[in-house]
Amino acid sequence: MDEIRKSDSGPPEFSPKSGVISERLHDIVMLSRDFERHVGQALMVNSTDLAAMEHLMTAGPLTPSELSRRLDISTAATTLVVDRLVALKHVQRHPHAHDRRKVVVVPEPGSVEKAFTELMPVIGGVAALEAAMPEADRAVIEAFLGRVVAIYTTALEPTRSGI
Image (cartoon, rainbow, N blue to C red; front, side, top):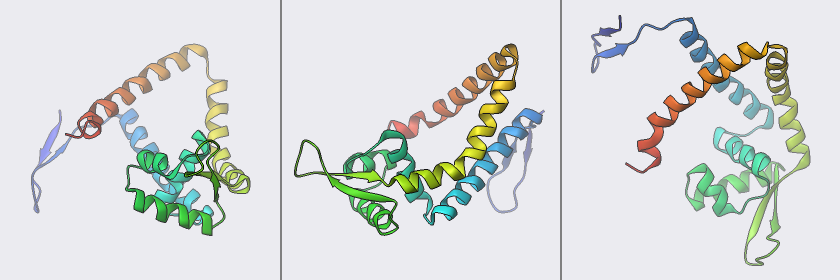
C-alpha cells in the first residue's frame, strides 16, 4: 500500500512503495546524473554546455538559433554557451553553406573523440549486456522500458505543450 507521510515543513509527502525494478530505475537516473557530471568535468563544461555538445554530436552542425530551440534557452544565452565552447576549443563557428548571413556551430573532432572516450565504457557495456541477452528477455525489457518512456512522455506533455 502507498503511504502518505506528514512533512514538518510543507505539504504531505506521497511515497509509493517501490519494488526492486523501481529502485533500479531510480539508481540508473541518479547514476546517469553523476555520469553526466563526470563527463562534463572531463570536458571542463557545465551541464548546459554539455547538452549543447550532445546536440551537435548527434545532429551535426547547427545554427545558433537551432541550438537555442533544442536547448530551450534564449538566443543570447546560446551565444554565451557557444562562446564558452569556442574558447575551450570544443566547437568552431563556420559560415553557413547556403546563407552567408548565418553561421553554424561545428563540434571539434578532438572534443567529440574525448567525449566518446568518456562515454564508451557505459555505451559499450550496455550494448554488450544487450547483445548477450536472450531474445525473449530482450523483448520483455524493451516492452517494459517502452512503457516507462511513455509514462515520462505523458507526464511531460503539459510542459511541452506550454501549459
